[in-house]
Image (tube, rainbow, N blue to C red; front, side):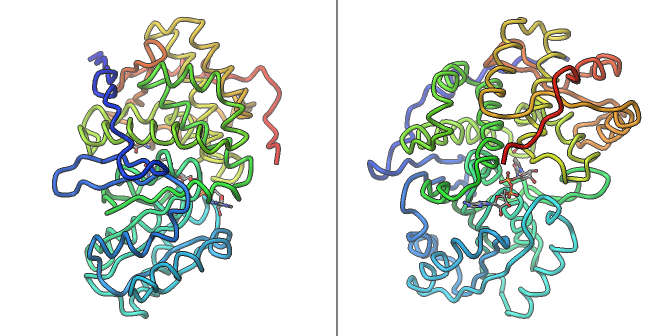
Length: 391
Ligand code: NAD
Ligand code: GLY
């Protein structure tokens, strides 16, 4: 069934500014499990105070990866201690390959050794890898303890820290073990993006561009104008764009928390992107880079199947390119076969059929679209030179 989803009306509400001039607040409306996303500068020092306002238990664990911990763990721990909490730090390896069950087990063992209790809570201090991993630990340790997201990458601030998808990868595919488990608070401190490597910043822009394609043509036009400002980390532009992306995600998640329909639109570009990550064993492409290639392929499929104008295909590809993201991949015949096989493990497969999110135009997509295998293969762009990471 072709389902067309328009979000424009819901997104006209301009209620993001609420707390102070410097900080924006976006609410994720989920009844009793509703929570706020704070977006602004100098928020990490407020972590403890905000956790105290939520009346979270005294004992807590901050989970961070080996790159982020030396940069920001002291500030997080100090803020928590100043607010009367008794935090411990758990460090996990950095990078996508860390998102696996062995590291979940290690976290459980350390939490048990530190005697965390049902009322204790976990702070995920890091990018999407730590957020997904620590969130899954929180969802399952003692059958669930509270958790707070402190996203430290652009990708995590606009996407992974919001909406409650937590989990880890299997060799067979991305995010195949997980849960829906909402955080109590998301604290997106823009200052923390200052130390983010440029390649990671660009990877985050892939998910930002995705929001424009799936739900917001005006955001897409803004990105076309302002991608240089985002790459230069202009604080005002970052704040406005991050808040807009969070607002879109909050509306989508508020309407369809567990992805029975609408939420699937957030997976634009992810079917092929996740397949690429899996066949490269999560080592070659950053998540955002794989999604960028996946979005270009999804745009080509959309032109063929869903009527996306050729001009829109070109704009999507050009914007990703200007953001410094890969838009094509060279795959030998056996790799193409493996890619198709990997896509069969995607969570969006239903009745053995791989399902795609396709765009009708920039700002409007349809989910749940079955596409012939030949079209999928033809959509994977192979003409340009192989992508070389720039930093
Ligand atoms: P990441 O968590 O691996 O972080 C990227 C790298 O940057 C890591 O090496 C990290 O140590 C480093 N880093 C993070 N913040 C830093 C900072 N401020 N300064 C310096 N270095 C910093 O990658 P990511 O792109 O944030 O997240 C990707 C993951 O998110 C994937 O596993 C993807 O599947 C997941 N994801 C989940 C959702 C969801 O809804 N749960 C949505 C999108 C993506
Ligand atoms: N990033 C996809 C989702 O949260 O549903």
